[in-house]
Length: 611
Image (cartoon, rainbow, N blue to C red; front, side):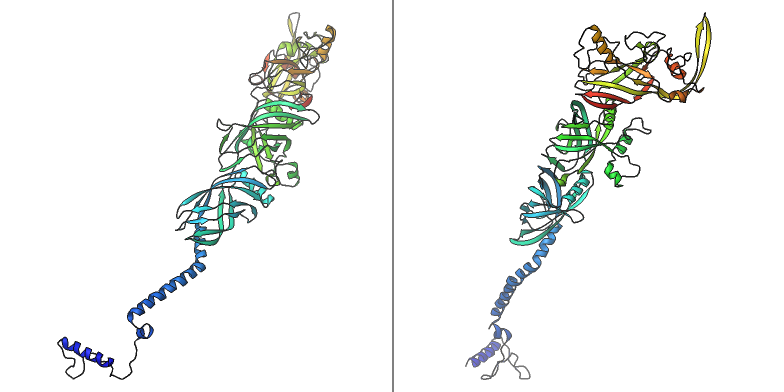
């Protein structure tokens, strides 16, 4: 019945449209239903869903199921790789890093770092332990990295406060040496953490490169040097100084406590009389550290001078901040120097008192953990004294020709000119450059002209009003003048001398005079930059060994005046210089400099000082 009904509806629909449902050949123009009562082949959507609408709904359901199943699978499989790719594309830059409070195995670290997120979505980076590695892959240490929010396509500044636990002390020390020497370093940060993006957690491996600019300390300088005390049993002279320097690095050090460093010195590099000497040469040669152990191991450069250790220094409250330490904003550091009593230390003291700038190598610290041991080697410029110790000397006919009797302080008798009775030399003026009392003792140094002189002279006397030439002198070129030496009683001409301790002498007049004439010390009251007045004393001139043989062309090196030592003990070339009248020794005068030892007593410590 249903089949017939459908057939009638199709015929009726064709008739209503005004057309015939048969063509010219008598064939139907509309599809005809299957003859009633015969089987029909079902369409595809009828077979699956029954109707076309139901088929559409089925396709949508299949697509939804695919999205719900396949997309999570893709996220699980490809998501971590994509997220880690974007995360590793992010850059990490250290803006500022501060190290403080070092202990045996760790340092407090405060870091301001900038992470630039290159990904298109925001994310949260969970806290994790980050390992620092050097360029060779050695593990230096680890710190705890805090949680940080990464904004999409924007940089984020993070503030890290943690402890850096050292893993490899030797590797950390070697890298720190390079960093503090001013070398640029490439480190890396690695660690496993969780990154939350799109509401999902992803396990990622952090691999970030860290570039550190060198943290060299420049313009390291010691000023306002003052002698504090001395320890004769330990053989140490204690000196205070102010330390200033500058740093432009993003690396800072705070709360480092007191640092103890070794002090090394290159005597030849700091010798102001060395050929080619100058500030640049002194700094270049003076910065070459070549300890005896390094020299023995062949670790020094070709032609390097072997450095000599002169003592240690303590830097109190050591800190390094960007800028200048020793400026109005950041006061200078206070340092205590322990100078060993040695010939080299004496040369340092002498050149300082002669107002020469010097270069001293600092190596340290030597009182901290192994990972910080001797990580810093710096060149400290020691300013010369603001007051010159030996300011000059006055040589006159009275001092060089006539001389003074060693016992009376009066002018020498013309027939008692021998060195055992008559002192001929110069009146020396000195100032105290220190802020405490000390004394000079047993002074001896050689004096040279600024340039070499060559001359001829004639020894002439007048007899009965007629000139009589007794001897002709021809002297070879020389710049040597004389050896100046102190003798007991150098204060014989100064009756107001109050003794080495300022307390004067005891006994009657004869005993006090005898004590004064036997006194070998020149005491200095506390001075300083303002000075404590001029302190005069007398130095006796002696022939410089070997100079008579070098200068007297005729080979006669004996006493010049009639060959009689009691009339004058000096050879003719030496003697002829003394007859030239008065002249001024010292800066701006005829004589340029002296070289030799002066013994200094500070709290009964004897320090041999080389001028």
